[in-house]
Image (cartoon, rainbow over all chains, first blue to last red):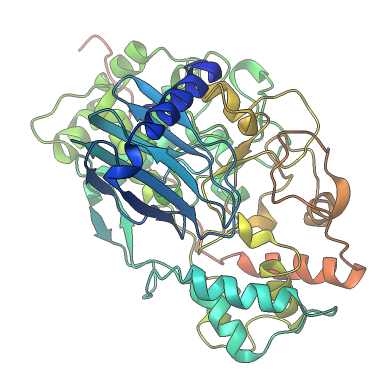
Length: 116
Length: 356
């Protein structure tokens, strides 16, 4: 089974989704809180996660290599771009649904996020 | 699902990256020559311990009957359109399960676009192919059979050929009770055999296990360099020495690699899968394009021979390695070769009436 990914979507669409999410973030997403997900040993710290609508996922990178987070689901896609070691990436989850999260560089790194 | 496998020695999968990173950072700060204490080396070695079992998917657990059948199929040239090419034609066990060529050669001498990758330790190696286009070994096994440039046997034809060989009908009944001979069961059998192809104990493993005489002092220095100044372990990590990731390492050429499979991510342009370094000394020439003839040339490439471009991996930087350091790195890589017993070729079942 091929991984469900945003790459087949135009990059601009992914950016637009990110922008849309960012706009929603300013209207109250922070109020729902932040959940940390670390990337370490080429794995996400949790294989699956359920969060409330509006939660911001804070992806940290504790590895010594770069990652590239890709989030797809509920009709949106988000691309972190290159994420260097020590750099965090914040993803506001404003739309309920199930999202697949993976690293574009290391495709074995996968997790599922459910937003209620 | 995990299946025990006797050829894999006892160990614990323990990727202690935090401790590894701390030690690596400390060692990297040491001016040349790079040295490490025994304790520091032991910490580094913890990231390279071998697993205790072979992983397999829940819907295709490893069994002796399947592995035996898959081995016959793997070595059987009747699975190709010409009747002359088997999986083993390119994945030759005598050549590190590769072909010794820069670029693979397929149907009627067709020159392929990339170097033949090894099937060693592919049970852990998904996704497969240099560009990762096959998610599973089962999916990978189907690809080259039907490829017109490789084995050139349409899938419907290969099923008919296998169904028409009486010995295979018996073997499939034993390996897949109640299931038909079809493309899926053919692929499952081949994938199962491939999962059993595991590199055995190498001198490096014996050293990691405490045998100080197993490798040379040069190789020991090379191991420390590998994990520190040379930064090889950023991608060539773990017991197979690969992150199973995709990186542009700055080789010339127009092959877009992973970007063709996952368009839209600029960092995947000209990115190819990190190959395992197990038995690497027997697997030249090197790189996805077979462009580097020797391990020495590989080290030179990473030292400062790469093409600078936007997609180049952030991990690729000039290393300023000395001549001795380059020699140490090569000496280390040569310790990764196992001396496995020769592969015994299977007796293939006789051809039968294909009308059955």
